[in-house]
Length: 155
Image: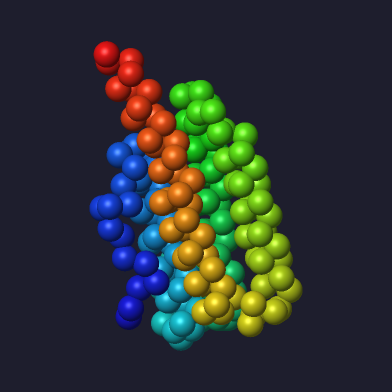
């Protein structure tokens, strides 16, 4: 099966906890995309997907919940890191996190209310584009600030 995203080392921030979070996001996005694209191919080894009675809708919801939970934890870790390095655009970045979590939560609510068509290829593409913008845009900025701060301290 083709993956929604394939990890590339050029996405590395060279901040290990953030890079590991981003790699896990790619993995979770790909698992969600697989269940949306191929609803009959499920992972019966997952602790919450261990019986035949679970619907495809419920499986996709479990996958989406796992992604949202991971993103929420990642944002908290990122905010703690940015605060620790006195990142000057911290509040703006944090506001962006709030907007994104609101979007994901709203999407999840709509989807959980039986509107299965709301989590389709178009939405997966939007999430993919958000991920790329998050890593290449927003996160690169604080990573660059961190590296520049470290270099100026070494001088």
